[in-house]
Image (cartoon, rainbow, N blue to C red):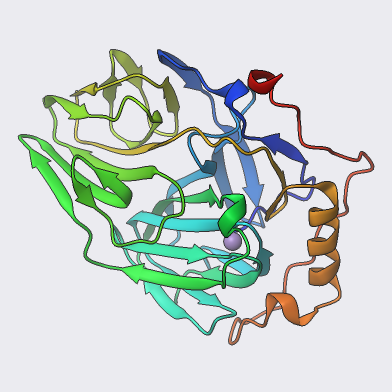
Length: 324
Ligand code: MN
């Protein structure tokens, strides 16, 4: 999905100064954002006061929406830079096209992982016909400076490793969890996992104390470290944890997001992650003049998405308080 927000804001993210070194329980409220005509998403990251969790820099949760009599997701070709996109579905399907020639239907609990590197463009649409319900999350992972100019590529993995405990199935989407590793390419120490809990389950999930974590509730009612969470909310957990207590009062679906705190300061605007104002201006210009840089998306039934206007303010990466 794209950031279709017409008032795209520049955000400065990353840096140790935002990381909480010890376990915390910080509830993040979603911001309701309209995407196009009919879709509304709940944006959990970036959030007021919490911009990143590890290298995870953007989290939208959408649905479940009844799209039986509607076009559903229709996100026209748009560019990305400096990040990976993760498409994760609980219901429905999304047809992905990109400028490297990918044409892939992504189904529930399959990983669609697009690495933009220096530049890519893609579109996402509900195929026709499509399932009645659409429910999923769209996430971005910031690429570290050493890898943010890699060649763009797309990976689709339908068969991901799982860990099971009584009442819990954890599917490893990205990175590794308790020794099980996703085949998706990563560029920083990170984890993304889908947690399916059955009603009445009380269990603990092993965590890496060097990572910071957050949990997104997608469905059901669950207590995470004692905090009751409803669908569409996110709990930031800080670092220093070796286990995460989970208790499900109903069948529940969660996403665990974590990683080594992302040390580099980044500048994020619209669908781009860069390191400076100039990076962003250049990417926007390249997209607007349809330069070769972002390539072409074949077959999408509609026009490409124009970039919003840049804000007047010039943004420099924030000084990292931890480094003074
Ligand atoms: Mn996108």
